[in-house]
Image (cartoon, rainbow, N blue to C red):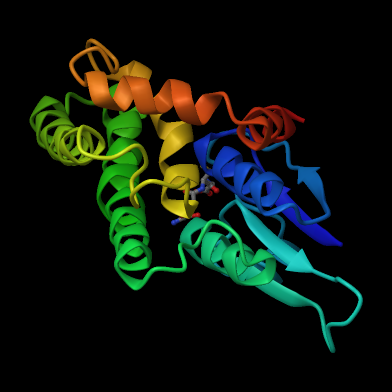
Length: 208
Ligand SMILES: N[C@@H](CCC(=O)N[C@@H](CS)C(=O)NCC(=O)O)C(=O)O
């Protein structure tokens, strides 16, 4: 059984969608924390950065429990354990890695900083906000172009890159003017991905 430590945010939703789509047995441990509060020191043994999500795989058959922290690492681990969401074809697999990288290292961090500059900062950071929004839109535009050519980010089939992107496309995106309306191919993809039973179950499971 996998124990998933999560908070009800887009990152938590990514992990629960991945686990549901991967079909792996898991138990979500919903952590309640005040914004800005430090994690319990014992949690640093699981997630050295003290961030969520993280998981501990205690499945029978493993010599020792395996700990994974960071959403992208969790995605790769679940792909390996489930042998799902990773295309067999090399070109499509490389595409999944590439789009997962765009989501994890471009889009997601920019939306995280945008959350801070627009909702938490006590001083005017509009110049920084403009920069991170422009970078977030650059990622959205790239995904829009890709999804106007194929049904999913890696090609014709759902992959872990879609699982990583979906929660941002339904939650964080609301903070940008117009939401997904300037991105029609992304909006169609959001509806397609959002209709998958594993995605529906994952979104619900992250809420606790
Ligand atoms: N790079 C990390 C970021 C995770 C992250 O920022 N998680 C937030 C919740 S969405 C968190 O744990 N915040 C608590 C904190 O920063 O102390 C990942 O991809 O998992």
